[in-house]
Length: 95
Image 1: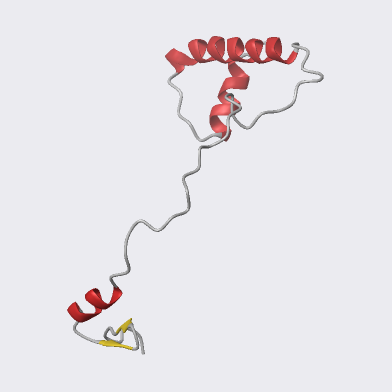
Image 2: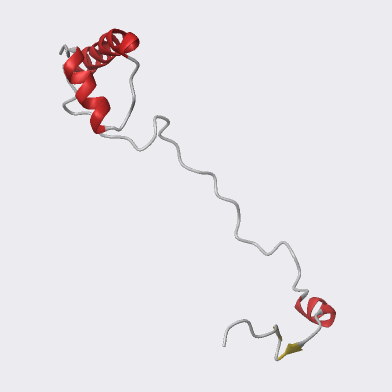
Protein backbone atom coordinates (compact mmCIF):
# COMPACT_ATOMS: atom_id res chain seq x y z
CA UNK A 1 0.00 0.00 0.00
CA UNK A 2 1.42 3.28 -1.02
CA UNK A 3 0.42 6.69 0.27
CA UNK A 4 1.11 10.11 -1.16
CA UNK A 5 2.12 13.47 0.27
CA UNK A 6 -1.51 14.59 0.60
CA UNK A 7 -2.28 11.55 2.75
CA UNK A 8 0.67 12.29 5.02
CA UNK A 9 -0.37 15.93 5.37
CA UNK A 10 -3.93 14.86 6.26
CA UNK A 11 -2.67 12.34 8.83
CA UNK A 12 -0.36 14.98 10.32
CA UNK A 13 -3.26 17.43 10.54
CA UNK A 14 -5.50 14.88 12.26
CA UNK A 15 -2.71 14.03 14.71
CA UNK A 16 -1.98 17.73 15.24
CA UNK A 17 1.62 17.30 14.13
CA UNK A 18 3.66 19.90 12.31
CA UNK A 19 5.70 18.44 9.47
CA UNK A 20 8.46 20.41 7.81
CA UNK A 21 7.68 20.56 4.07
CA UNK A 22 11.30 19.67 3.34
CA UNK A 23 10.81 16.34 5.15
CA UNK A 24 7.39 15.53 3.72
CA UNK A 25 8.80 13.21 1.04
CA UNK A 26 10.86 11.31 3.65
CA UNK A 27 7.79 10.82 5.87
CA UNK A 28 5.73 9.68 2.89
CA UNK A 29 8.33 7.10 1.87
CA UNK A 30 8.81 5.82 5.43
CA UNK A 31 5.08 5.46 6.09
CA UNK A 32 4.63 3.65 2.77
CA UNK A 33 7.38 1.20 3.72
CA UNK A 34 5.75 0.59 7.10
CA UNK A 35 2.37 -0.07 5.50
CA UNK A 36 4.01 -2.43 2.97
CA UNK A 37 5.55 -4.37 5.86
CA UNK A 38 2.15 -4.61 7.57
CA UNK A 39 0.63 -5.92 4.35
CA UNK A 40 3.41 -8.50 4.15
CA UNK A 41 2.73 -9.65 7.71
CA UNK A 42 -1.01 -9.86 7.02
CA UNK A 43 -0.30 -12.37 4.24
CA UNK A 44 1.23 -14.87 6.70
CA UNK A 45 -1.08 -17.82 7.39
CA UNK A 46 -1.84 -17.80 11.11
CA UNK A 47 -4.73 -20.28 11.12
CA UNK A 48 -4.46 -22.74 13.99
CA UNK A 49 -2.05 -20.58 15.97
CA UNK A 50 -3.26 -19.59 19.43
CA UNK A 51 -2.78 -16.01 20.52
CA UNK A 52 -0.25 -15.53 23.28
CA UNK A 53 -0.14 -12.88 25.98
CA UNK A 54 3.65 -13.08 26.04
CA UNK A 55 6.19 -14.58 23.63
CA UNK A 56 7.62 -16.77 26.37
CA UNK A 57 4.80 -19.04 27.44
CA UNK A 58 6.01 -19.55 31.01
CA UNK A 59 4.38 -19.40 34.39
CA UNK A 60 5.50 -17.15 37.20
CA UNK A 61 7.38 -18.71 40.04
CA UNK A 62 5.42 -18.08 43.22
CA UNK A 63 6.94 -17.85 46.64
CA UNK A 64 5.42 -19.51 49.66
CA UNK A 65 2.82 -17.40 51.43
CA UNK A 66 4.60 -17.25 54.76
CA UNK A 67 4.94 -14.55 57.42
CA UNK A 68 8.48 -13.17 57.34
CA UNK A 69 8.20 -10.38 59.92
CA UNK A 70 6.80 -10.41 63.41
CA UNK A 71 3.93 -8.16 64.48
CA UNK A 72 5.36 -4.95 65.98
CA UNK A 73 2.14 -2.93 66.21
CA UNK A 74 2.40 -2.33 69.96
CA UNK A 75 5.99 -1.10 69.61
CA UNK A 76 4.97 1.42 66.93
CA UNK A 77 1.85 2.54 68.81
CA UNK A 78 4.01 3.40 71.84
CA UNK A 79 5.99 5.80 69.63
CA UNK A 80 2.85 7.55 68.33
CA UNK A 81 1.82 10.86 69.91
CA UNK A 82 -1.76 9.55 70.27
CA UNK A 83 -3.42 6.18 69.85
CA UNK A 84 -6.66 4.52 70.85
CA UNK A 85 -7.86 0.90 70.58
CA UNK A 86 -4.82 -0.09 68.48
CA UNK A 87 -5.23 2.79 66.01
CA UNK A 88 -3.18 5.92 65.40
CA UNK A 89 -5.03 9.15 66.21
CA UNK A 90 -4.32 12.06 63.88
CA UNK A 91 -5.53 15.66 63.84
CA UNK A 92 -8.78 16.32 62.03
CA UNK A 93 -8.11 17.59 58.52
CA UNK A 94 -11.60 18.12 57.14
CA UNK A 95 -14.67 19.48 58.90
